[in-house]
Image (cartoon, rainbow, N blue to C red; front, side):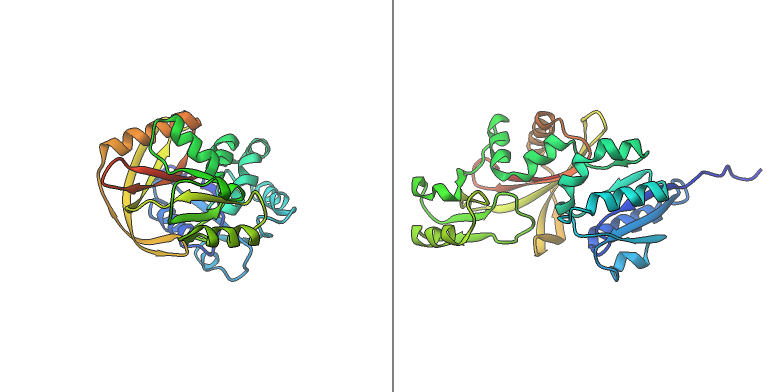
Length: 274
């Protein structure tokens, strides 16, 4: 008797030029016999490496372009995409806000709800979330209020909605802070206490009901432009309990990761990446 044919799931993955997208493509290929897929990828660069690994490539505008979401919808509709996996964090806001519309086209988006995404992308709001969960987190204020700072130095100044390690600055005194404040638009940067310790990233995933399915803490041994290329996993039950609190408070859905600093005392939570 011949095997029952299973129609491939049409999947669209963003960021075809990223190592993450290429890793997802490889993972889907590994399980193709049991979970067949037709893999589409998209990117703003026509010669992205993932193009040559997928079944089909789509060129799209930058995520900041007003036509980005319309271009994604056009691909979803014309190719009958059933699952969209966003990779590039600049796209998260638009795609999270558009999940309901994409659902009308028959496409599910592997991303957290819009409210959770907005709170995770805003690092000042993320800090408030950590406090609500009873977790240690460094003192943080908007950069333009630097004259109120009384926590000492050094400090970290970085974008409120930053990605990777772009424009992250360690500053040693008030004069350096004042100069950077003068050089940045108001409302775009934050001032945060520098935390001495070892950074740990925790990858996690929840089911559709928001239940935590798993988490993996890891040291980042080699990092380039905020992206980890080598790591070492570790086990920490207390961190799992903290992650469960966070995803419950956010009503989170899907994959994500967070960072905390491993110190001599309690772990100090820094940010969440949806």
